[in-house]
Amino acid sequence: MNIATRPSAPDIAGLDLEACSRGLFIGGAWLAGHGPHPIPVVDPSTEAVVAHVANADLTDAAAAVDAASKAAPGWAATAPRKRSEILRRCFELITERAEMLAKLISLENGKALRDARGEVAYAAEFFRWNAEEAVRIVGDFGLAPAGANRIIVEHHPIGICVLITPWNFPAAMATRKIAPALAAGCTVVLKPATETPLTAYALAALYKEAGVPDGVVNVITTSSPGPVVSAMLADRRVRKLSFTGSTSVGRTLLAEASKTVLSCSMELGGNAPLIVFDDADLDIAIEGAMVAKMRNAGEACTAANRLYVQSGIYDRFVAALTDRMEGLAIGPGTDPVTECGPMITAKAANKIDALVKDAVGRGAKVQCGGAKPAGIGFFYPPTVLTGVPADAEMTHEEIFGPVAAITRFDTEDEVIAKANDTEYGLAAYVFTKDIGRGLKVSRRIEAGMVALNRGLVSDPAAPFGGMKQSGLGREGGSHGVLEFTEPQYVAVTL
Ligand code: NAP
Image (cartoon, rainbow, N blue to C red; front, side, top):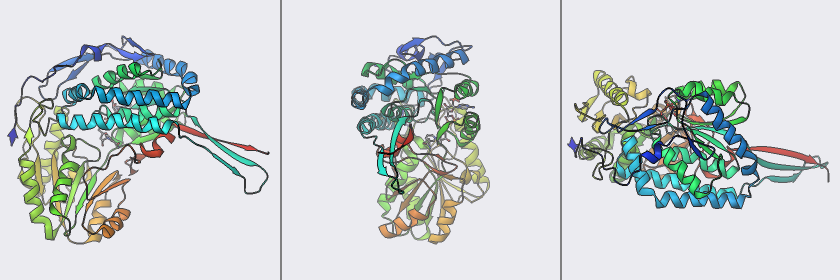
């Protein structure tokens, strides 16, 4: 293991942490929360508390929905071109402040600065893409088949949206929802993850600066997500829930949302297979596997959770991947040389440790890593396991960490059956020089997104989302904005 500089004081020059801790962002103002105590924000690299943010209770949640409700008619009536220009300004400001935002993400999330920089660019792109979409939300016009009337279809803003986001992409998961919601003419209340609220508040200030009217975007943090979110979902003015997080919380929220028959978009957990066929280009497969496994130190819903490698290339793949994983520099996210930062919490690092111990107990072999280091920070080393059996817990659960679990396979049918043997269906990766075979295999894999000969699948211009219990609906592409609209059809005799 190559530990860079851990632990050390984080480099937070240029970060105004107090500005991110001014209060809840409601109706364009920074307000004190009425929750029991401020919420501490911890740097996972040093375990130090770096800031506190406001804590919302039910009255604050109601105030946020009030603010969104008050702003809704004006924003829905704002010309699409004007909305588009404000979104474009958000893109420009995020891009201008990219380095500050990346440092903030690294500080509160722990991810390596290079990953944080990538996230900021990705987060900004949702504003650029949706600035372009805002002026292209077109409906339909046609003659009814019976010839008696015309059919006019218009896409209206769906209304007030509650947006809930996880800690693993504190900027991008929020902008992936806020930008299309605003493009569609909706107002929103965002509840970011408790571990990573600073980025959400820093972005809120930036939206205001970009000209987003007061009340169009509201941000609240709370130590009681269950009651606070339930209260907002029960408010009849709220018409949309867009959630990104675990499948288990997603199931709970779907049940909550059923009470008011809310429109739901759910971006949930994954268990991505990564398949390497004998005829794959080894260098491309290793490069792709490193990205698919190690972006965000494995803390990604799209992370390759199960690596299936065909017998003919297996030994060479294992040796090359182990070599790359062993060479990664571990350290605080804010340190520019770091390639693998800490996990988000001690609980997350312990869970990874337990999954590795379970797999080893069932016969998996450790090629590198495999033991949680003692000391400060929630670190887990890059780990390669081979011969991971089908009954290992990590075959069925998200590892959400820097552990590559490799299994050998022989035939195409065998690996497709293994790949699909999961309740999840978010992402998959396929490596083969035979593109025809790659496309054929992609179609047989039950996943909303397949990366063919590459390790990165996310793209603001493409529909991101999962099949099976990985979710409902799509974010990004031309689909993303429509999740925040309600089609209305008018039958008219002309
Ligand atoms: P999580 O525990 O489900 O939390 C996600 C969000 O839900 C957080 O804001 C959390 O607030 C909130 N929450 C938790 N319990 C709630 C409740 N009872 N009612 C209302 N809200 C509640 O997930 P996570 O650990 O933050 O994120 C990791 C998971 O997200 C993984 O499963 C990953 O695969 C998934 N993910 C999916 C995608 C995708 O696009 N499909 C993208 C990224 C991540 P608190 O922080 O206050 O608990």
